[in-house]
Length: 314
Image (cartoon, rainbow, N blue to C red; front, side, top):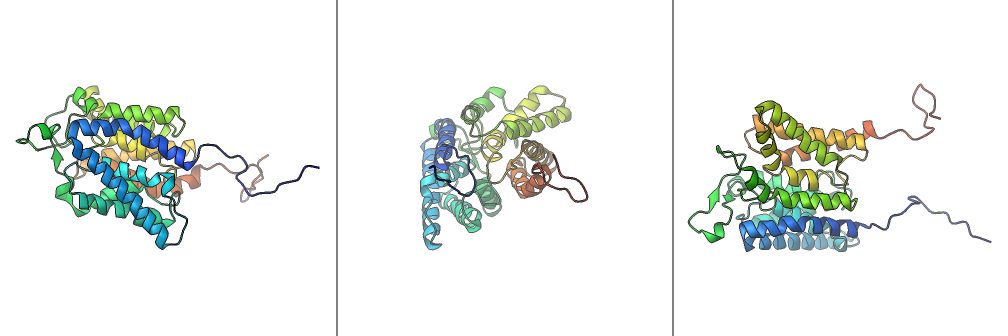
């Protein structure tokens, strides 16, 4: 006689574990890491290693102090470290990067319960804290291949420059900027890999990038400037790797569309009317905060649920 097994949901389980998902994200980030080392030298690799190591150590210590099961094996701390490093100038002092790691892991992630329970993307929040705390360091950009020419070290980003960047330079990443955001080709390759592996859906990135393109096209009337707008700054990095975070973005397709369009609108408002040339980080953080509200109005009602003053769905 077969035994009746009763257990709590979920009853349908996937072989895709958190560790495997994070490993796929790490693989997707490798082309951008390789490009950053090519463009900004070995210090880009060292910066990434420092951030990853600091995030892992902070997570291990915090879980130990809180007497919770340690979660460093799920690789989420490594992903946070890589994303934070990709949002930093290669010339930033290492101790400032470590402060950012502390903010990301301890304050934003672990203080709210750990992976899946944080209200905002840890790397995005840490970048904003560093930007507000160490503004001059966070806005000093290294000239591409500066390690080959010591006489020229700093430059401006395409968004802050009076001279429009060439589309080729934006695609290859040979422009000023954070170490992981400049090479659009590498980031797009990583995004395609994540979509093929079904780690993310393209809904949010397409809506995010598409909104920026449409607004830029309307504002400038020049399709090449609109293309440059989506290839500049941290737009692709943010849209593909941070606006798709499971814990801080909406669950439904309708919610993802609203989230992506909202990110695009806020980004362009900051670019055109703000004091800063870039607004991707702030737009994602703002929409992260609005995610519970978006979910509230977009999550479908359960079949058979009785509405207030109405009849049940059948």
